[in-house]
Image (tube, rainbow, N blue to C red; front, side, top):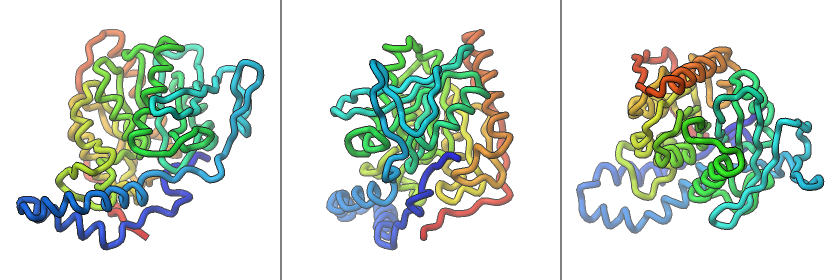
Length: 328
């Protein structure tokens, strides 16, 4: 069983303070005095969002890393001759752990950014299933401060983390942008869209239970505050490759409206997957999950063969059931 956001943390509690502040600021954004107040409280709001929303690394980590000759290995994970364990240096000076799951007949490589309450030790079964069912190589990594990775988990560090992993794929595995698919789950959509917005020839992006931004998980504001974190609502519009959005209609952590809005903002839309009754951490259990991903991969293979990427437009239906985001 793989674990995603908030399973151990029990969710976030915004409290009345931050919600009232944001609502008041939005209503008064034309008032110069309130603009000054915005600057005054920016530090408090930023720290509140980061502390209450973003990162919950498993404690203790679910695995360790050790050397066996010239190779790295992971404890508590069965050995696999087609899996490499890597320790990568990031620009801020952290060392992060990554795993590369090789498929002998892979056409594409999937770069997977996981949710905020899991580490690689809890995700390896999913990576093995994706490798087998989709016939892809799977590269994943732990953010700084997660698992056996050093440093502290911050928004900027996650960006440096995924950049280090991408550079490794280029340098050590010869992966080209045209053969790379970025996959971001929940908070992992942040580093995913950060990188996708910078790569012009990327094959595709998958957004799984993705967020519009950090503050929008806490409160559905319409404007983007400059102290917000993971501002996916802005970055999605800079992505030029096909984007598949997967979201559960009963997601109790990140409301389905986040996925819907991200899909609407995509320049290159692929047929979305709205999983009826799906929550935040169980979409992999629905048979349509793998079925739709396999269909998506086949479409990307055909597009790659013709080298003629075009958007695939499809109307979407309102879900019959959709819970609003609630806090404990």
